[in-house]
Image 1: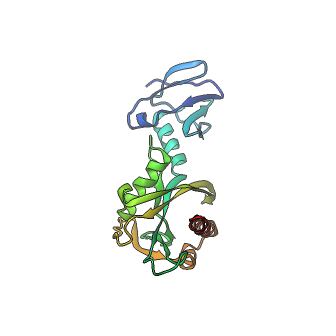
Image 2 (image 1 turned 180 degrees about the horizontal axis):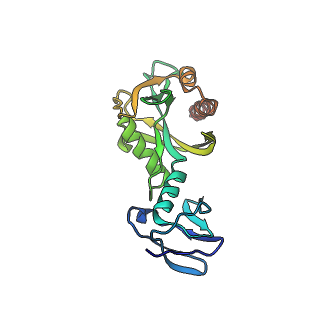
Image 3 (image 1 turned 60 degrees about the horizontal axis):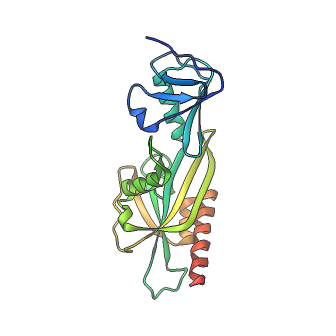
Amino acid sequence: MGTTRLRASAYFPLNMAAMTSQRATSTARGVSAVKMNNCTADSSAVIGRRSHLYYLQTQAVFSWPYLLWLLNREMALRACGFIVFRRLASCIPPPDNIEYLLLQTSYGEHHWTPPKGHVDPGEDDLTTALRETKEEAGLGAEHLRVIDGFLQELHYEVRGRPKEVLYWLAELRDPEMPVILSDEHQDYRWARLEEACRLAQYKDLQDTLRAVHNYLEAQQNKQ
């Protein structure tokens, strides 16, 4: 079984679609056609992200299984989803006619969040948000109207490690459209702002919901 030693501080763009195979080829400055085969693991390898491009920075020998594990670990700390809202009957004046969708997890502390999930290899952020909303709530792209101009980034720590979550904003086209939960969730709630903030518990998500509400109210006032 051969080994491959990479030059220090070389950056290797990673082809995410190729990560499902047992061998991938990547090119860096001064080093071309480097085969990432099974080798010895090295903890100094670092995977980073620049403008939606993942790269490897390493100065030692690494193994393919270790690289795949490291990549999956880093990607698990980035998630994308949608703040989904619906408008109630027109007899209720805005902004009180707006309700937000929150899902309650079936594991851990059973916390409430909008639909979201981790980015898969080769997948862009918005595609992730759409896929996760479909998987977790049964709401596909055809059921949603994505609101232009709103994107919220949350940064916090999970067990001592940084995590980034991106939320887009979408309106449910049919307010009566049923929500179909996956096994990851045990309940859902359509809630007005204050109830949604109470369920959300975490301040960064509460702030995001309030930012959404203010944004929608401002858009309403422009009409």
